[in-house]
Length: 203
Image (tube, rainbow, N blue to C red; front, side, top):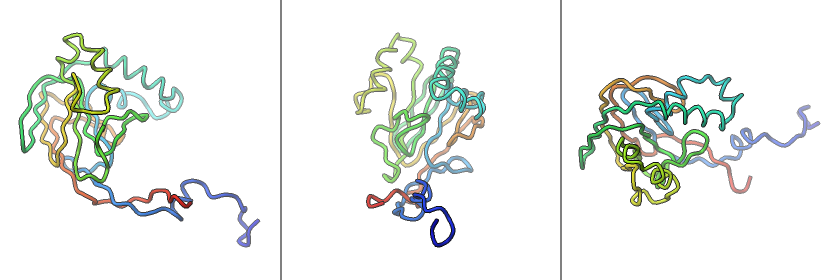
């Protein structure tokens, strides 16, 4: 026992970060009327998140969740997407997309290849319908493993401070794990708008 009468046990990781953590400013994403810290997923991945309860995901684990997401992908219907940026307008049918402020989504899938949460940019990745329709599954898997988005064969990758997205129909969306349905998406980045604590190297 310590002098306070509490067990003299090591601090839990979360408490240790709260006590010894180093402040770090990161960017914050604005989405329509809301905010997000990490990622917005749209399409079959978001549909899987919407279908499954937290209890199921805890029971089935990441492998079971991945299996269900794969099943949703096989049954997915593409939707028309319009992407507007300061530099270009892109239109076409897509299977899914991810708007990300960090690097990973879900169970650690690295989607934001060159993204950092403090770089003042959002990263947008989408899978056009042509990527699957032309038998490019192998190339899609290759893109998943490719560290340089400029070398992608099928996936589309953009960086920017503002994206204006329009969908041909209401689509499932997962916003930092919270699900909803969207027919449009206006997103921008607020640089260094949020301060977090990260573990100290000396802790």
